Length: 139
Image (cartoon, rainbow, N blue to C red; front, top):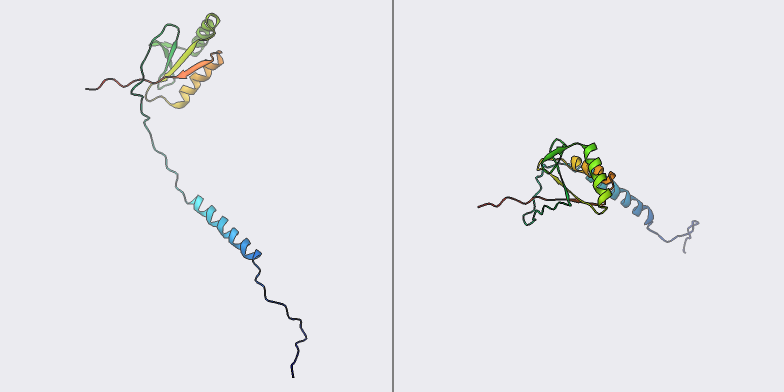
């Protein structure tokens, strides 16, 4: 004689959705921990200079040099920012297509060069370039 169980028999199932949720949680946790384990280090870098660039001095070009302390010089003469602004606006009234080259000395910070660029753009100059210096000929 066969004895029947009063409880209904259900087939056994493996629920996979909670397992997937747990795996995604573990993955996200490990990713967050690994991101925080990175050590951020900075290096002082001396950027290379161009070796094939040629310097062409033309009278219709304004060559600005930014010194390490943030001072500006034009054609080896110191110039203040208000004087530079006045000079550029006067030259722009004669030639609207005036090119300006900005060159930074080796130890000049990027911020000082960008500050000079901001003043030149504020004066209304449309053609601005960052110039590079050539290396002296080495034996």
